[in-house]
Image (tube, rainbow, N blue to C red; front, top):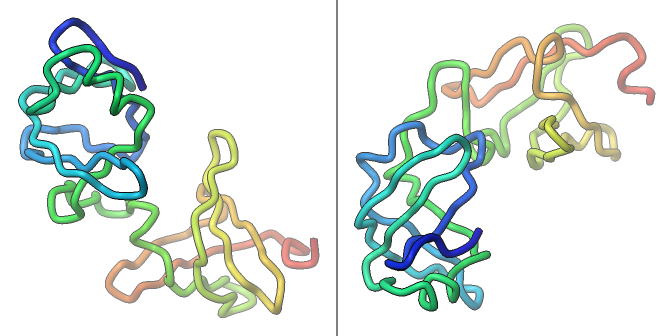
Length: 159
């Protein structure tokens, strides 16, 4: 988001998907000029949905400003495993979506963020349908079978 303090720290905004424990994370990638540049983490402190991050080789507010407003990425190998019934958005891309009444609806194309809500984008009979990722619509996610089971209200697919 922006520089923090006088020693080159940066303030980062945490996604709801962000890990709760940053202890095992040693490296992050910062997007710069359409490339991902690796940085080693020297220190991190959390405060609500923000974190203050000190990266190696970033030692002044001016250096911190150069990377502020950039996206930060974790290597998949370092991100914590998602809990049972939970998942990272990119984990379910390509999963089959099956309705309890209609049957196969198609595959997940993407997860769409609509304000505070997340929606499954599925190609169904030549059109895109958006299914809210919450109860009562989603009955279950089976990562092993790469399948999401849903129960859609009557008439939902005709909208």
